[in-house]
Length: 69
Image (cartoon, rainbow, N blue to C red; front, top):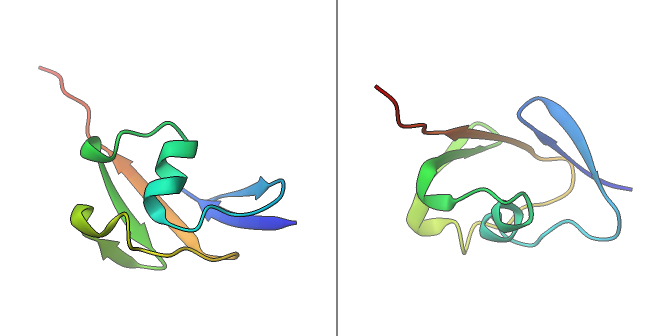
């Protein structure tokens, strides 16, 4: 099975892991404008989400910004 570790939890992907970080965010229904992404300890700039390739076994941290007051 294809697996990624997302925010500390292993997630299985039936079939194939999304090729790019932007594809993963879309699959998880996460708005790229409201998230900071880190892949294997390296922060990925938002402008690079569409070119940042992801592979099985990687660890991805997604931190969302939430408005409030």
